[in-house]
Structure formats: C-alpha cells, structure tokens
Length: 226
Image 1 (cartoon, rainbow, N blue to C red):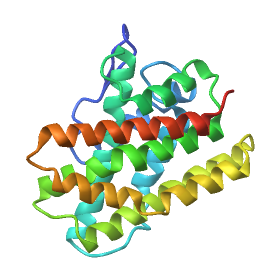
Image 2 (image 1 turned 90 degrees about the horizontal axis):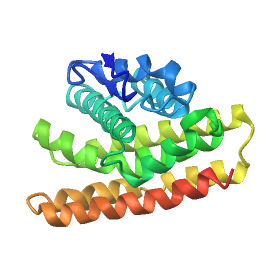
Image 3 (image 1 turned 60 degrees about the vertical axis):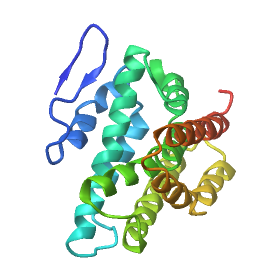
C-alpha cells in the first residue's frame, strides 16, 4: 500500500489478496485518527478492523466461513473506495461524504462518528456487498447467508455502541436507537430486493441511490449539529 502524498488518497495496492483490504485500513489508522483527508474516519477504521478480526460469527463450516470472510473483505473494500473518492472529491456516496467530511480535520465526535459509520456500513454498504459476494461465489442469498449477515450486523452495532459508551459524548438514546434500527432486518430485506434486480442495472442503480439518500439522512441525525 502507498499513500498518494499530493491528494492524501489511500492506494491499497492489492486489496483482493487475503487480508489486503483490512491491512490497508489498519495502515491508515494513524492518519484516520488525526482526521487527515484521504485516510478515513478513525472510529470507522477501528470498527472494521475489529469486525474482520473477530471469529464470533455463526461458526458454520466450509462455505459459511468462506462467505463471511469474503463479505467482510468486500465491506472493507467499499469503505476504502469511499475514502479514496472523498480524497479526490469525485463520486463520493452521500452518506460517506457526510461522515468523512464531519470527521475531517480532527473535529469530529468519536461516539457519533462510530454510530453514523456503523449505520452507513450496514444500511448502505452491506446489502450490495452481499449481492456482489453471492454473485462471485455462485450462491444465492438464503438462510445460511442471512445468518452471517445478521451476525455481522449485530457485531457492528455492538462495537459502535461500545465505542460510543467509551467516548461518553453521545446520548444513550442515539446508541439504543441505532441498535433498534439495525435489528429490524432491513438490511436483509434490501439485500433480497437488490438480488431481484440483477440484470436490471438501471433499476438497481436507482435503488442503491435511494439507500444512499436514506443512510445519509440518518447519518446527519446521528452526527447532530456539533
């Protein structure tokens, strides 16, 4: 991995090798914590690397381990693409524009950024990530995949709430509200809907844009006015 000095954008080298994308996020962590443009948001980077390192998923053998590993890697790659796009100010998803811009310069709130980032990962990035990984692995999103998705969602929500509690600067209602939002299986319903839109790129793009709009609205609410 190299860092483009002029733009501040992270270049991940070979994000498709095992652990490559996660390693890239970890290497950006110091800059992300400092709020340097092009390095991401510190709380989000820590959340992703912890999710990738954990082994408390469904624990199913063979294909489910493969699916979980591929899904987390795809989730991390999507985040890295958003970080690079934000550094270049080109094609940034609305929700990540909200989260990364508020964090930039080191003025962001750790607790609120953790919650907003968790919502962006689950409600914007995770559904299309599942579709991409299922397509790549030749699987359909069924009960086994849903177990993995729910485990990852629960893990992200728990880590975000722990980060918010440790920072102590975010009202408890916001943390509990995020857990409520993420526990409603909306991510899985969106995944199933996106799966039905395969082969209809125009409709799929409109649905992804709608996901982005909704996620950005929630992110703004979670980040507050500070």
